[in-house]
Length: 317
Image (cartoon, rainbow, N blue to C red):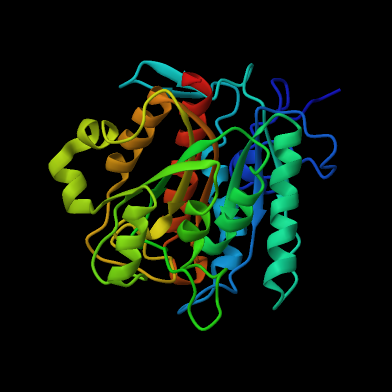
């Protein structure tokens, strides 16, 4: 019987098949997560103050991530001489999306928190794709019974507003809500620049609550090693990445683009150093809005950052 080209299994090119993150297995039963890393979509964007559209971020990142579905060989980095994400030992699953209830912030956030808690209960590392940056709030809430950690934020905006017109859970509030947690031991806020979402008083509050704030230009003066030296060593990190930390020349697909941002290798080298310096125990990547991304470069960047971060997290832990 002819096997029609399947002698060695499917070629399974990026544009073939069901679109999960990295083409890793889909797990619909959140009580049956058996993996080292579980990816969860949080397609919520009602926290936006300007352009919406990040609700489509998880779907866009998943599609882009199929480009990096490495098949049987893993991802060999000749600069590091390391094979990241080797197929024989890599245990990553995509558990789909948290349910979003339109106009209901608290219910939507609760559903995101539930998903992250299920991942933690399974002993896996949660990797959450937003959505706007408010989805970080339920992600951090899910760690309430976990060991303390240091929060590393890579972002253009400080997101440290306490309350504005009664709003406490929008995408300008998450770092303030995180800093209030007794299990968040401090914050490194990196890439903050230009006109921000937070008034001067918010910067003063952030520093008084244990935050180290560095702009892109300050980061470049410090260098990667200098920036890493400011982050506590041999500890647990939660990593939150807003795609607008990157320059809009490479990441236009976001609601609040801010010129003067990072380029890819600056962030990759920082994350690589973070993985060697301690353990990333959870992360989110937010604010990808595919409708403003005509070439797909922002989604590709997001997927590439996630894949490389997961690879380094697993390799260096």
